[in-house]
Length: 399
Image 1 (cartoon, rainbow, N blue to C red):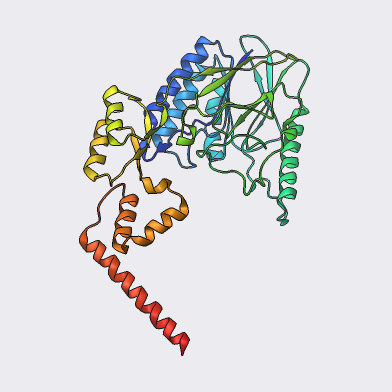
Image 2: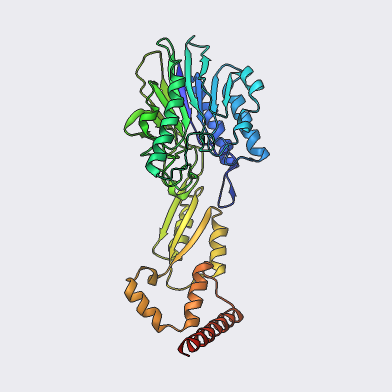
């Protein structure tokens, strides 16, 4: 059988308020074409289908359309588990209808593995599928002991116990797989994953997942990666970049051939859909940015711009940049004093009048806007009032 592993779709997620729905639709189109071209028999979706427990109607519609197209009227098997962003009951709600099409949906942890027959090859796949096991769902194990090491050990042992129970059903004549959505110790994170551990307590040791599965499909971390150097224990990563900490990452899905008892050699297939996330550092100032825009640089990208300036950038300059490229999400001025030595900078600040300090602060906080004279005057009055209160308090102490 030929298997594809994907995860962390996050349908409904935005980027700084910008919709990603068009990109997510393009990903589904690409994925459907890919499973056809690669003759995939089984698709594994390792959680975080949605970005929130209460997704929009558009996000839900896209998910159901994706499942229907991937399953292709029951010709292909699809197995889905809930992640930490998903509402488990919502994910599993359509199970009675979905199973008729060869789609298995698992919202909550269970002791029974998924048992899936593959039509093309006549083989069977047993999947130890563990949806996101939250601390609430494992609360019978977690005591009031606040020692992080003990909590982590307890959580890993409980997760490992659940996986081992399911693995008891593994057979020599079946393809034996595991799938879960959790944070495995040692994985490389990005800013776009919401934490599923508190202070590192709710992490899982890789040994807890070593249950004899031929391949372990993981979800949660958005960077494609093997766990602890084990090529058959993998995060597929997200199909789109969801924060600028993922800038420059190439997104992928994982594909492999599997037969009972065989050694699996997974490979990545790179995805083309989705607008790239890029970081611009314009040390040549605003003129350099306009040159890049004239050249059509990163024309379809989402851009985080650091702009070196010697004077405050005006609202008109910001508006023109955004008008020229609608993907400019962040425009962050960088002023010379921001790179000076701390002591030297403090000394220079002491020489500046307080109203000038306020103007500089205001400009930085607003992306270059100049405060109204009335605003500066109000600030000076508040400072004077605070100084009077402090002086009165000091006089009282002297008495």
